[in-house]
Image (cartoon, rainbow, N blue to C red):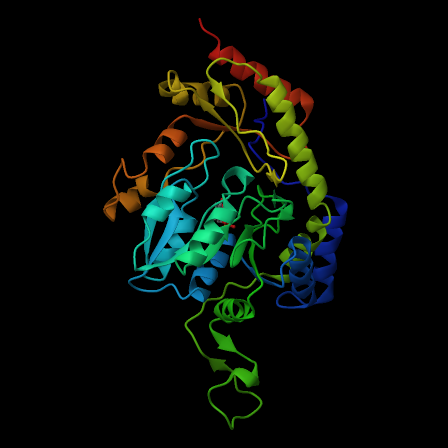
Length: 382
Ligand SMILES: Cc1ncc(COP(=O)(O)O)c(C=O)c1O
């Protein structure tokens, strides 16, 4: 039996034609497709600028760089996220400081984040866990008051809305990932959207070795037309044209993808209604719509110790479940840095009881019924 994946991309003939057209055009990197894709994604979320990268992780690295994060600084990130949110602080010699989770949504707790601010804190980075927007308005106010750069890790949340507006303009910089399981894909890729031109300029420099070709920015004058100036230590984080063309084509279907994800999530809500011991993701509020990246269910505290057993039985039944995520401070690497269990008890308890069941735009009713029936059978008292 073929495993039902926890997520998968939706590629159609138009996507394939768009990529093939780039391959035939002879222009494989830093060309017109990239420019079009960046314009389209900025427009879609209502931001002024978009800087694309060859991964969401590279995008976060660039955003932290643009924010001025460096040695001795602290960056507040949730414990409940993918490691990249914290790793990007380490890349720049800064220290990730982990804040605990809101048990309802799984997003970063505003009060715990507030408590963790020190005079070394440079940036605060809430994550839209499972596609559900974090408390963006509260984080915005907090960041303004404490003069922090507000970076939103919306890797999982392209297509979500917050207080009626697309996620993408609430923070100083917002990251979307285009990994295949995300709202849209470019194979690998990511973007930062921002209204701040200085940040956009710094990120573009950073993604291309820190080398500028724009003579108006040069410190050294009187050079030949061949001259390029390295002004910072950057990387090669550029997105290829094939990816940008795929992203541009996929973006046209973003609304359809999210509508289908939402419909599938609502179907799970109905299928799992009143199952004893099962905690469902919180219902959407009117003005805050999730991108439904994941459908994370949790086992009630009295049966949470059975999570691994339930997980194994679902996998045995051909259901590609996952757990999101290993709390970052509990990764072996982070434990070696001195972070300890107990640092973020809510995040630890949340993850210890969590299972992400399959959710993707083209999941069928039959697959969902099979998943629901299997999980209900596993949870039924014997
Ligand atoms: C919350 C979060 N942050 C960062 C990333 C990193 O993005 P990417 O895989 O595009 O590098 C991901 C995705 O894997 C993620 O889910």
